[in-house]
Length: 469
Image 1 (spheres, rainbow, N blue to C red):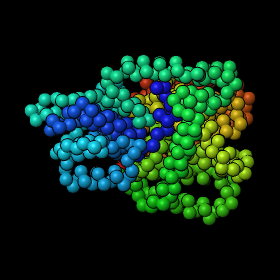
Image 2 (image 1 turned 180 degrees about the vertical axis):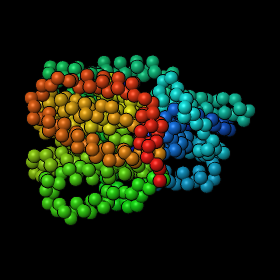
Image 3 (image 1 turned 45 degrees about the vertical axis):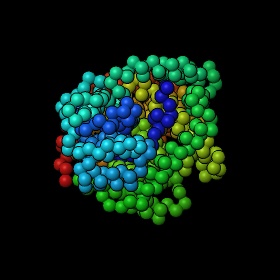
């Protein structure tokens, strides 16, 4: 299947899509294989090797515990934070792993996080986020083994499956009425069909789902974003991980509620900052979030959607159906732009730096906002281009390997960039010198040239120049 809006927007747990969600999916896939191929009964031990960025920042990103949960048969879309705590507490107390527990079959093993073998300085050929898993029998013979790569946004690739995936993608694109992998082709479809970018994306989605299913699915995604923000506003204290970063969203919310009782437009910036911080504080604590398109950038699109639904012209007069229509259009447009980044470059901070996460999310949000504010197709493309152009070169250097500093505030800044990019594009006529395709390719090439120290390894930038305390 070609990249769907529901591939780019998925429900999972924090703090990282590529370091938490992806590894959990990979471990779940391996556990499922053991059940499917009837190896579980004979499995007496496991070997898990974690490479590159996954090993370098795995502790702060929850990679190792995510793998443990996946091996127990849990999926990031389905598991609740309370279940996460329950299973991790049980593993710590007993030193036992309930292999495939959530899959209806279980094999108890003496296996702990400490038994994983970490290779932070070894990068496998396919991607820096690599992991190998093997199940062994009582004599040490390998029953099953696989190598997986977490390539950003929760997407995983199994070694050896690349050719099949490429063939499936080509078949899926051929099935779509308006296949595209570049902005130029997307704009061409809009011109010949008369559809908006959201309309083209919707038409392609309808190959796989009904209109009703698409609408319901997107409104569910939006509701999870809202629930994430609301949950964060109720949680006081400090974030886990040792940096002792204080949660600011609850206090900011109380202050804003007093100062802005009538939702005065003069306060829009403060509300956008609040929503972005709230979502990313929830992500940093391992809460339930929507990858949009990654966990590290999960607060940008919800914050810009909050701006759209509260501060867009006439927003206070919309009825429920009108509001939902705009939410659906926003997410479809943002997803179409996300497809371009996924196809032509990367949304993985470990591969191209934070420009691939926060930059792509800001670009997606700018395009979505321009769409529902009445922008033409050219203005929407221009908004997405402006937002990425001014995130080029953004490094990924989280202190302590935690998705907290500078990640949380960076989401708020990028949300504001997205809003400004949309406004700038709408002031123009859609004509501009740099195309969206050109800026995406530039981002990809910038990521290739960027030192590995600045690509989610915690070996450079703020990660080494700020003392953890």
